[in-house]
Image (cartoon, rainbow, N blue to C red; front, top):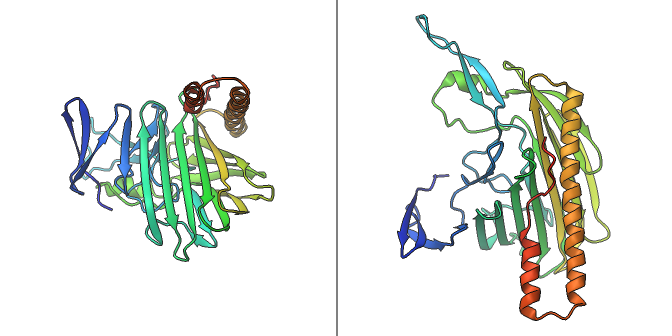
Length: 348
């Protein structure tokens, strides 16, 4: 997939983003960067410690994936035909951590893939105010089953090692059998975009598995790097909201973990999966210490999410029984809905 070149023009205090490869322009507000159609997956959500490239939830099509944690790196030897004093002998490269952004959807046994079926609408918006990447898709499978998919992704500002994804699926016209697979994958096959074969050889499968754990809705992977001997733990935790009969199952292997959610939805019903992804690494701390760190951070994120959900529910009930004007109710609801960041002060 070709990368898209952006030019930014300021015209009467309005930012216009021109996409050279596609030959059209669209306006962006002060705090929003919109992506109409499949434009570019290079947009990231990050706050300086944990960075996630803006790839699609299903993982493909993609130019280059990336889930990076500040400071987590691998080393590789630099070999010279004729060594001399002062030449560097070791190189350092940031390596990808286990990717927790993957969420694959099957609609009546057909995988959601924008390259197949009919794509009625597709919009991606990176909000610089809330720090979220939002995606809204209406897609019809090759068999004619229509669904609406809305996903929101963020990296926590208050909990630097936490990322969260809210994934919602709604059938449009007919009842649909849905299978949703949420994954955490290490040592993914990535395209070689560098020009140094020494680094490429050292970074091929850089993580060595130490431990893997799984429960009903949780999974944990612990790896270490081969040369730099840094240890990293990555975990995911899910909150599933949907109809009464929803089956949830989690399985784990040394290099991947998968949580599968299966249900049948009638038109208008929504399956919502909230996914919390936590990371922790160290060159000194033990595996049990990193394991507890990831469990604690994901638990704190879930507690914060639950507290906000309860507060929003109470606010809706309170506003529905109080004499407010329509404008006041809409304004209050907008304030509640806009607070998407995790508020816990706990830092990994």
